Length: 303
Image (cartoon, rainbow, N blue to C red):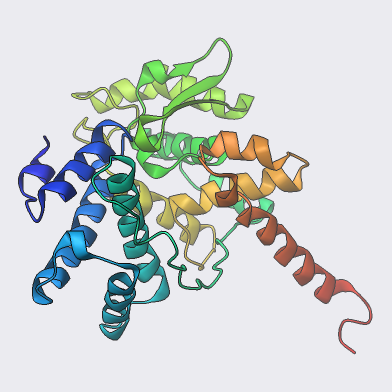
């Protein structure tokens, strides 16, 4: 068991569920930590009510969600707690450790739809031009920006990339996403050339002590925070004052593909989404931008 599991002992069945998430579902340590925190809080609630896990009913869970709401939790946080409980009680029922699933008929709290921030094609071009290609740091940053936009990578996927994850013969990246799921992503020629040039001519100047593709001044792999700061810095230099992060590049990648005619299923595969519902939000981004353009340019929009 991981250090996370060793430190968690609220209930043996909860421990078993976390082990299931790690071994069978392949969840990351960050996801496991979130599940453990939510289950621990529910266990504390049961202890305060002198209730046993075996006695939990749908009414118990409704009272718990009401308890969380009174603490000031927003709908999104409530939905996360409910997701953890749903998974846990579904696991107990599937394993024959409970006669029924008390979370089966609980309704999700309504979540406000928050559309992701997206750069226009022209804005993206401006950001990409900012790094100084005559320096090792500038060439590194330009290569990072190119890959974030060319492949729609999560920042964690970018910093965990190794040189052998790129196949220059076919121009494809092998990426290990959430749950260590592997996917292959083709990248365009400009991104290929930047990556090959960086690996052959620039990466060695960082005097590598780790095998990550993107390195800091000490030759160690860049942190996610370092990538975030670099993206923010180049966006500001390009004159973009909105909140731009590495995930903005991922959102822009998906939106621009759909605007160019790609189908939703293809974009889902490229992003590594397990559920196409997660990809569908980009169709709403498209619709929102079309409405904005229509209002700006239709001659009767101001009437």
